Image (cartoon, rainbow, N blue to C red; front, side, top):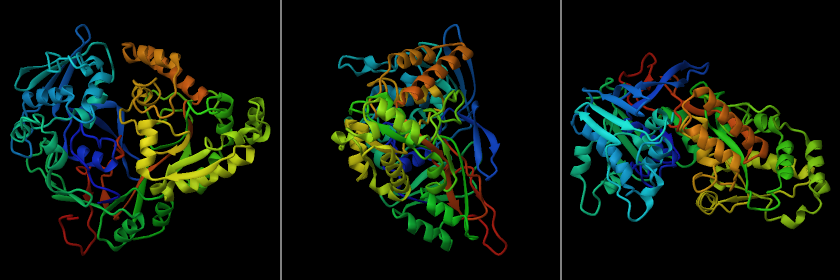
Length: 538
């Protein structure tokens, strides 16, 4: 497998949790308690998941007591780690205790416990005097039974348990690498291994170069088709294309839409994809006047040439993003009146805001510098160019300002001071509107990825009420109302949803669209052509 990187860490609470290649490593090496069921295969041959149904992984069954807000999980008795250790309740308790310890660089495990209302996983843990030891909110009943108690009837628990941040470590192997300075083995998982019960065991790993795993011979669902997967960093997408076409790789990801379009014409290569949560947004910062004027935001939304971008920049493999929650998510509420391409309406709104034909906006030239990641030029450059032309046509003095990826990320995600930018990295991996809204649109600091500094008391209240609403119909209605406010006010300006796509050797089957957009390697197999050697070795 060729990508534009390899895992930077296997520490779920490390600083690289939003890094795509790191998520690929975490998804494939760690094993969760539960996962989503398979819905079927789309017309392109990609397996898609049913985000309304869950099935067991390390937990083979579970039940919920609404009176005590307690979930009881029965663990598998046949799960064995890469180190040869059998799964027990102690592994689960260790993993949750590690999440609650807040000892990692990024508290991902704590965040998932908090967002799913696990008792004790509160913001009070961040005070210097807080006791962070795991209490009876996660407790062992016997070797193969554990209970998790919530503080409220929050439906996000099962979705949270599918996410790598609450996956289960092999506690015996983790403790073997602990030190007095690092009792939770952050250094080991950041540099060497993530001992778990999944289908893959880390064999070799050199940062920035390659990541090699071998099949876990004791994996409870059966050994994978491939006995080894080699993930190699090939930074230039053109080189990934060339290597794939020679047959020296079986799978390539993160190409530009133009490269995928070219490869669709080549008989030695196959291309497939599916829609889920890949989106492109125009991030207009509410703390950068005049972008705090909602008339200007609506004018921008009406000035975007959606069809031109879909056809010219994505070669037809995109659709207009109507909302701020991915349309494939259960609970997505489509807007009653979507913002469609209407340059005359855009001009009218500009004039109403006091800027007829854009006159007066020249005072804000720095605000209208449209930034995007320079290393994403092949994918985002064609979109940015079309946006610049269309927005200037109605009066916005847009200029392009591509920035180095590190600088862009610092200003978008840390400083949050970038006035206007294109962003295609917002992937809410909790497949639920409440999770997506919390991540990006609830008032900071609760909305940890709130890059546009949006704040709306009604949205905050609707989210808080929906999060702990036990009645499914009422919860859905509350989240639909929140989505309507977000879209009407344009918390961010949605542009398109686009397919997550891969190029691969014909005969490779089992590609599955995961919420992280990472490829799970376990389902993959290769149907050999006549004359090829058997075994499916990559």
